[in-house]
Length: 266
Image (cartoon, rainbow, N blue to C red):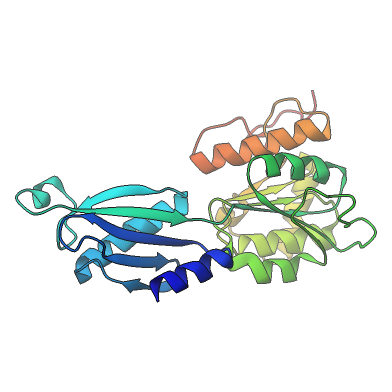
């Protein structure tokens, strides 16, 4: 049952983590954990299962594989582990590639999709205009969807997490406002929106009009998008966007245009 479920999760690109006891009591015991699902199997103790699954989901979120040490009942502190048998658990994460959803089939999109693919992203390009959203224009994208933002984010939003990114490159309120609203309803780690400071100020007014007023939501928006590195070409802009995504993901203080007040182009 465990390995059948593991295979199903991997085939469907769903995150899952397998825990295996490699030393100590119950060598070979396995436990399968996945976000929003009950665990399968046991490592030999219910409290050990709970603690180890909690830790493993943290490793899964970061896309890491590791070996962790516990006491037979899930003890983790040095004091609790003293004079008790050590249970060594191999934590094997099966994370799908991070997703980047790009809204807007514009000139910058092709460059951003190329750089994102080099970084290992599963790239989805979305635009409601059939003449622009074509696989011929974006051959490097994994999917090119001719649709509006709402159905895309409704279908995929629950799977978006801290490793994923949404980049909104349009200047059309009918498209970018719903894309922002839908993205804010997810746990996606990065929401970048293209446009000048003046454009973004007007965009914030439109968001307020549709009920997006919480500062903690608006603070998630990175706009102007990218780092302040003097980008001029689509390729340079794509690099600045991806660098900002990396910096935000790892918690570095990077020179984002959204955090400065100078001109975008110098």
